[in-house]
Image (cartoon, rainbow, N blue to C red; front, side, top):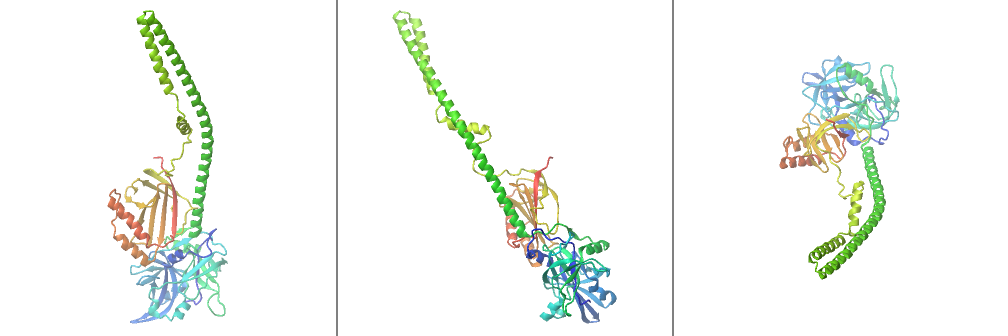
Length: 515
């Protein structure tokens, strides 16, 4: 085994607004997939340690390492390969199924039913000066700890070292990336990752300084790794989305929310000013109209009263002339005029009508007063087309640009999965048995937004999440209050076991479908 070192490089980009250092949650997630590749010679009941390197999972049962790490196992049939994960309590046997010494890559098939969380390859360009992290099992650390063979075959956390890309340096044989993350013998075959935990390359060898460990490392680039995997018939997880820190996304979202609130407040102020201006003009006009109407009706009432008095006088005169019938008719007309005068007087508009008339006029112009409850318009039941907003998302291990959902106001999604109340949102937590990933999907009816949050957990945290999940039934769509309460409690209970930071957060903005 080469005493030099290995570095890896799969095409990466530095985030435009990236952090100075990698996000701890992403480095921890990447470490789940890193293994120690142990080689031992067997002779009957005797086992002798030959050497070790590092590797990383690109599929649940397949490990990438350097060709020089497993070279002796191909030459000597007595040498066997052991794969020691970074967590758990079990190691596995391994078998080389693809070997490419030309670019120092090899692919190992896990045996004994072993399965590990696979890593994602970054296929974008790697910027000079980009922050990187090398993960592996340097022998210098093992020696300093005084570890023996029994220790080396037990799962333990890999060593993480930080550095930066010093440029692409293509060797005569294959494409590599030069970096400054400290590595040592034993790192060979381990991953070189970006700030989001995606594979940039595989550590292969290092430069030497006075016979000590490497000052610079070379990693087989992602282009070489992807070409190697394609020839081996292995489809690895792939993304070209530049890495963005969780802190950057959070800060940007806070600014977006603040800008949205400021925009609403400005619009409300402008509308209030326009309303006040219009209301002042309406109040002046309506006040004048009411004064005119009151004066007109009072004048009409006065005229009717005068006519009534005149009619009464005429009726009296006719009675004196012994013209009884005309007198009675005239008296009746006088009474009607008097009643009419009273009604006209009483029906004159009051000054209190000014406010009602102003409010009605404002409503007609669409400037009625806000009721002040601030309640947003909620998404109604129906089918929605949702498209990811990359500016608001943190995309690290996957990407689905669009998705369709069928939303029901009671929290039923796609007619089969019941979501529970989660503040202003409806959420459902998914805890698979075959993956070390917890996913929380949410729909916010007030914003017509669908979000997917992924947590790439270690084995112990994943075990706790599964234990909590088992306490609740697999609820299909329902209106049963107890079932809905159980879903609410399940989301809350599992959230308490999750890290503060998600590894991936996808934000989809939804519009109702035409059909």
